[in-house]
Image (cartoon, rainbow, N blue to C red; front, side, top):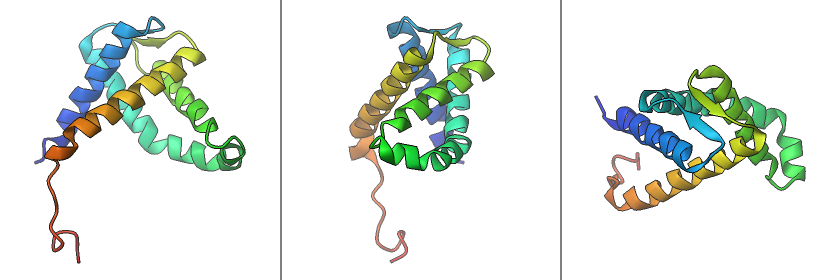
Length: 126
């Protein structure tokens, strides 16, 4: 069994907790709630966001992709509604939280990039 999922959950939980410490409009009751909120955000982004993105694609193209930020803010508010103990004070804070989450995930990805396993051509199917 791979350890990617538990590590991913802990990292996202830490980022949610960190956002609640730094952003005054985001509150989390405890670290376990932050981990659960990170899990729910991941599930919402994996299953609901693609459908919403597809349905609003013309609007997203007309706004040069800025509508994607509104979609992500909506996904954060949906997670707020689903997770007891995780609260976002409004749509503006939800968009700020989404930006914060994306920025921290990007930075963590850049830091961990040198440690990724390089697949050989045979493993890639060539």
